[in-house]
Length: 152
Image 1 (cartoon, rainbow, N blue to C red):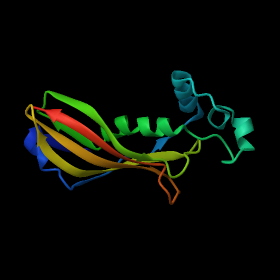
Image 2 (cartoon, rainbow, N blue to C red):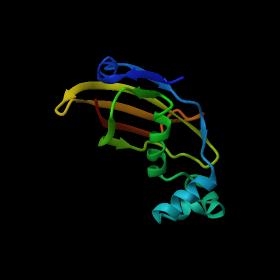
Image 3 (tube, rainbow, N blue to C red):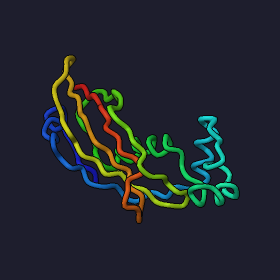
Image 4 (tube, rainbow, N blue to C red):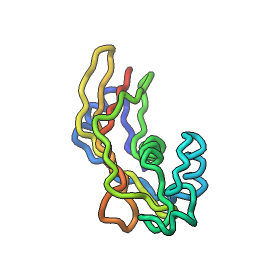
């Protein structure tokens, strides 16, 4: 069940809050192949399961940027925002990919609100730390600090 923030005051109240974790999402070869087609990145470690089996990861892995892109839909499972007119992805402060996401594994998102502050134009800026966890792995697949702006 996502946290619901109502308006800018509701967002400001989230500063320092842990938003919890999403449900698990399976990473399929079809999803990896579709991402490869969309980006033109058909490197064999992602798209050639037979060759990847003999490679450094023992099988195909998801693209790092695929893992990063999945933060967007998973974030919607953590936070619902009501009473604002517009929200924009303002960028990323830092992104790291500490471990791979094997095809067939499951991931989930952990989100924490680092800060929320008012910005010009009747808005707030949120800085969040997202951690993409891989089921059964001690290391996360991705840790990203994201910046969003929301306007009344």
